[in-house]
Image (cartoon, rainbow, N blue to C red; front, side, top):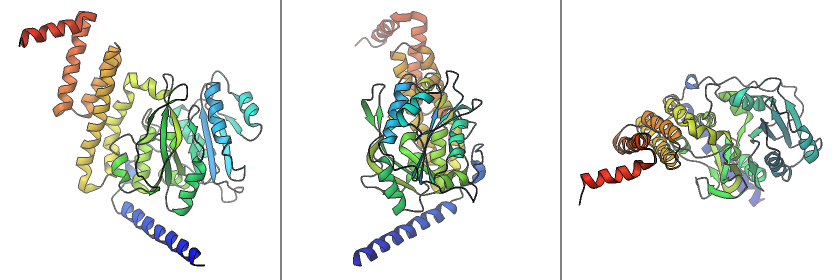
Amino acid sequence: MLRFLLRENLLLTKKIIATERVRTMEDSGCSMSSIRNAPTINPLAADAEARPFWSVMIPTYNARADYLEETLRSVLTQDPGADAMQIEVVDDCSPDGMQVQLVHQIAGDRVAVHREPTNNGLAGIWNRCIERARGQWIHILHQDDIVLPGFYERLYSGIVCNPLVGMAFSRFAIIDATGHWSGLGPLESPAPGVLDGWLERVGTGLRLECPAAVVKRETYERLGGFSTELKSVLDIEMWVRVAAHTPVYYEPQILAGYRWHGQNESAIQQRSAVTMEEIAGVIDSWKHYLPENSRVQLEEQGRRYWADQSLILAQRFFSDGDLAACTNQLRAAKNLSNQDRYRSRRLRLEGKVLLHRVFGRRAMSVLRKLRRQILPY
């Protein structure tokens, strides 16, 4: 009896704390009008069939068979059954056809397959996943990402104990084309729980990747779907939007794998710098979500973070001899922050690019010769 009372008291305390957080967010001046063209997500019909807790929605487009199989198996090994989890592959009208046979071979009838009649684009297919989801919580899991054992169980426990959260995520690993870990996502907290100061963190840097995050369907219904104006940072904009309006739960165990390889969309977009170009614009939109008393400081902090990332990428592309990609990133860095050391770093690298264009492979030896002439000692 004592154990039951203690547990009920703990749940009540967490609910009170979360309620206060929601009230604080509502009083902070976050304006729904600042959301960038967020499409409406309609609630399910009141007479809808019994709803599962989870909807695992897997958007695909020309999916690579081995990656898709790994994605599906990572979910199926944690499958709590059809009553608790909807699993569906949603194909965005792939010209090469769907991997229907592969899906049925792996999962039989357990995984539903839906094919869109026309291509929706990235935001469009993610929003179609949300619209087709019947579960209370939605996990959009990309065709080459994975979840690790315990992902759904651990997040379920955290969500049930913190009923006012509108989003939850775990720490994640970055995996390469062959599945080896090449990095880790940041540790937001050593203990699981509702995050403090999450909006300030997610609004000023890259903190999480899609496979690690689940969002309550009611959150999408309230805030809208992914912005159709964006091509690259639509997920980051969504995490900032959600953080401004609802508490977020975090699980520090590494329970998801974000695959980074040369053919995924993020890697392709690095060369064109579309991510950084979009970030420069979208910061102007989401700065209205940030606390008023620290808005200017946090906006500048975010710009400096992304300018630094852009300059790091520019240097890497220059070292690889990809001057076009390097130039794209330098232009994006200038738009993000053109002050102090960011400006000087950019100008130095722009000088190297110019020398390389004039002198080709001899550029660095010419630069060293000039340095010796200018600074002989």
